[in-house]
Image 1 (cartoon, rainbow, N blue to C red):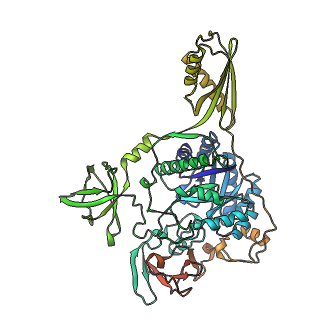
Image 2: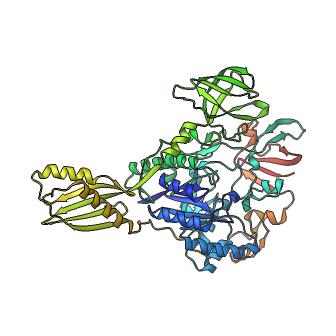
Length: 609
């Protein structure tokens, strides 16, 4: 049986705790430095607090130490690894090869997961990274199911795959556009999200094909209905993007995917199980349409090109709710009348709305008063009859997420044996812990044994603490038990179970294999930025190792490579012209970059012109 893991993001410990309560089997979070989201750092003490909560359900905590490192940072990184190990983390997500050497030097046993920043797109690349000792490989987002299966056949390491959230347009770990434009490296956690910026597009003759558009912006990933396909392809960890997202986003999306994974496990109970314990109840029915998104795509999962661009809405549009039928201005305010997309659309005071205002881009506004298809708001330029309106903040939904948090509980069965003057009770949890108690009883045996047993079953089958108890076998003649006695028995057993650590599914441990070698010549795309990583690659056969882009800024360098194609998105794809597609040019604030099209591989590159 294969354990499946839902891996949720956490900007901070409180969001991580909420993710676990909503069904996450694992959470990934940044430490105080060296994480690929510089704005999402956390103290070691907060991570220790998150680890303590995760242990209640056998869940895991992974810390992102996934930037490239410079030589003067290696000592700090080693000290941080020691502190994180002491805090109780389960694994490190890493990009820089030096981290494996630092873990050994620190003398700690920590599984290493190769970050998606390691650009894992081929079986050969996967096999090499596995040979370095990585126990898990986080795959490139732009892979098809067929490509994932090929990687699965090549390695024994666990496979992790993104299933939801924002998409980088470039193959992960090899985007240098932010560094090129602003001197802020994505591989150093400082990405300016240049793929969401506005660009002009020109052809070889200088004609403008598009102006002031987010030409590199992609829709968000949503594979909620493809988990079975991914599991069948060999994926065991399903990852939600969003370490900068708020708590409502994490609660909503995590619950949606947890419910979907539960359904998959229920469909194939002999094949799959969850990697942590506890069932989720209460809370608000999840709806990913109601949280931040730029529209959704399944990307390349089926090996087919689709319309992936979010050129006109690089920010969250939210859910489409209807069409404006009338706009009337009243001084500094305006009254907007809406034809709802369906009867289920209910507007709330304070809702946030967005629409495409053409040349002005995406406009957003708040509804001060919203009632029966009417929105009263401040004057909004460009909003007119016929405009398609979206809602990107549903106030009622957000308030319900906050007011009704999820409840996670571990199931436990209580067996009771009634003896002469004693009651023996044993509780067995779904993760295998056992608590036993024998208490004296001076109660008389019940005259109506069947009725008393039914009463005891009802009273035992209740919540206590983090456990959802149910009655198992009841043997012997039931005693006359008061409600206080059964309640007390449940509380005692819950306290006893709390003293026992929740069972954890064993973590995969990587095994280094020095026999696997790398290419003899490594260019800047290998992101080698320190002497320790250089040593590792040299020991694997590399004779020439170019420094990371950040250390040398090579001229005319390829800044990104991607399956995404601007020609295709704009209807300009030269389908039958092989590799003969002419280059195009992107212009951003006077910086001119060249787009080239490898039609044979169906890839687009962006380079310094």
